[in-house]
Amino acid sequence: MAAKEPDNKIVVVFRAAGGAPILAQPKVKLSGDSKFSKLVAFLRKQLKTDSVFVYLREAFCPSLDDDVALLTQAYGIEGRLHVSYALTPAWG
Image (cartoon, rainbow, N blue to C red):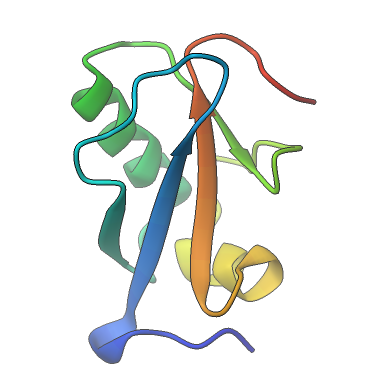
């Protein structure tokens, strides 16, 4: 089971791919019961774009309805969810 931050917070680490701009704040804490769609909406807002491609394990995009905590349990590294993002398709 993946380790969680206090208060059910998950640390999300963003990694730019495919020439996407690097975020000023590459790490954020998000509630574990949040849906993946909230994470994608955050990225869209930060990147000021309507289209963003988001990947876990640099291979696949989970469903927007998936819980961040469950994704971290299944695919997290040391209790953190590493998310790659691009403005054009990069993998998968």
